[in-house]
Image 1 (tube, each protein chain N blue to C red):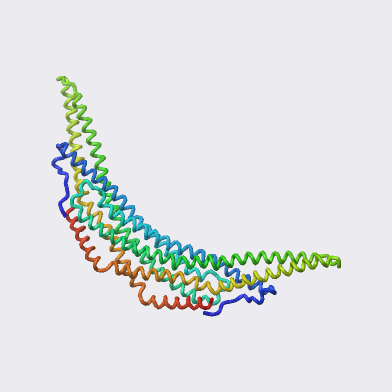
Image 2: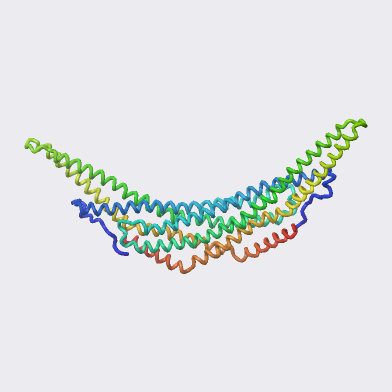
Length: 241
Length: 241
């Protein structure tokens, strides 16, 4: 991968218009990235939510299949085969539920969590440091204005010295906050690409695992059960006719 | 499967207490079955709903992955690899979406539809015929009461003949509606077992197909892509450090 653009820390003290202009480019990029990340996170959380709902839905279905036996049907004679068939299906749904639950957990840990962390850590850090840098710049501007309003008379030497000290302190503070802000913006450029790809790696690995186990689960052994149920259903339909 | 209990149509005309008692057993069974079917349908619709939501969620995720390219990042230099990786992931999610959509359709057609039809056709028919039978029985009771209130005097022969005709008509109507009602209750006993098992056959076949195709989709060819992405992410992390 090519090297990314970088804010040079040694330019921070001088704070030239060129540096400010480059800074605004980094800020625009960070803003776009924040919007995009929020939308991506929303889409990923929707996938996770659907996966989670599938866990709950299969749980409910499994319980409902077992509940047939407990209905106390007034005419339950001959229901043994239905009961045992629905029990078996309930077990199948339970096993499927295990796979869905595992996938939901994987999606939470390896897809949603990394992008949440990227947002909470990297993007939030940039936005916090932007605010601090803004405050420090304002303070610096204010102390500079105070300095420029000083009367030129000699008797004000003491007051002047005070203001000069204030300006120096404000400049140090602004310099420090700009260093931190530049570092965070540079780091964001380095991290953003991994941050965009990593969650989808988690997604894909989760799916691979899910399909592998699912294909094993629904193996030939289930085929013979299903065809015997199909025969049973067929014979019931014939009896109806 | 053992033969099911049956309401004998030849008993319908006599309408004896024994027949009424057996009828009430069939009615209780139909009531339990209606409640259970509604709960089972609800559980199945929840699974279908979750599956459908997964279709929509994967659609949104795929679109969001493609949208990275269109963000006009101020610092987009060197994004080519991220863009092509997210494109590939978007294609993977699209293919997964096709499988989810197919499964949702299968669940709708072979799980939800049969149980909806059982409810709309068989259970609703029983409940409608029960109402009609109740109405006809009431009419018959009313005409019988009228008959018993007739004065015994001879001059009322003509009025009496009218009421006798009315009673006979009401009895025929009641007999006919009881025959239809008994038939529907008997048919329900025949159909209920197939109706309980058939949707789960649809469910299982849908899942088998889904996992088979999914396992094929996430084959070795994807493994090499995923490990190259993992390497890329790893090298980006190293560059950060």
